[in-house]
Length: 469
Image (cartoon, rainbow, N blue to C red; front, top):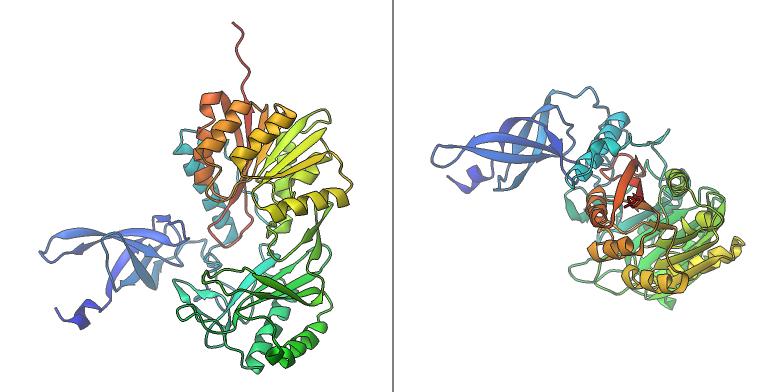
């Protein structure tokens, strides 16, 4: 067999049976190996839907999962629709725009059910996923990347090194997109080089844009490998002039980042115009947001998370509460106004300082915020305030972990509210509480990221009453 033959696509008819963790369809077909024997070939098929039969090309078959590309949809799903975004075929963001929204929600519900069932919980505890009335323009924060060729946009699907030039983004609002496109045009007009990761050269790395849906204020943060030096003065002055026409932009920042890690970060911060933060509101509480503040990126659905958490937690004015992984106080403030005392724990010190400031600005005097990791922080809070009535946790995707969950179990809060962005790690965490006589009562998925594989949930966990001897 020649090298040309090895690289020649092989076609298969494939039935899509499931979805993988990145949102692509999964299928199994049969092929003939070198000895003429039949052998299974497992495929991942982007832009497919469970139940469809598709004709696919496979160029590089592997022992595990092989990437396949749809050439023809033989038997389409009745949930298939036309993706409205012009970047859909190349963008690695909204991978489910071809799938009717109701179908996405049903799959997310099933995904949560499977995750908890794997840990021995009843899948019937899971309610239908709460979706959005209009699943577009929902993000309040976007991060765009500059390419060495001068384009600014998102990474290509399946090829993180490549960046395509952004024309629009249907999950971000028009104000955010238009301001971002002006920055992109400015960079091209001044022939400013984008960052090249392999060589660690180039000026412009990222553009981070965030907007409050309530105040309308916008922040633009340009991440570059150099400070805004005198050599860049004309370009920087022009950027400030161009952005002045966007009246909602209240913060224009230049962040210097010379680190190798390819993320939005800053060694030094320069305010080109306005403030170094913007004002935002959620659930009636005001917050200050800096460039690195973690805040829910879908404020509409975040309010539903808060409503559900309050309903599940049922806070009373004589009770005490702990909020683990509290961030800037998104859940802390609404609960603090309803309980006697609330203590928040968060490992990011800047978030704790923000939480303290946010509590003061919202007139709350019954809060205590501590910068520490969850395991040590909960011990400090217990020593100071004793056993809590309510404990809320909203950990990162990796979950809280066994040590933290066992410490929670030993602290014996009456009610636990678990907010999660990863059903699998959530189920593993809650399984740790079984030994402490806790019962999973309900699980409510909420869709904060339409057209993506991600789903959030809010769960109610209660300490079972000890049987009388």
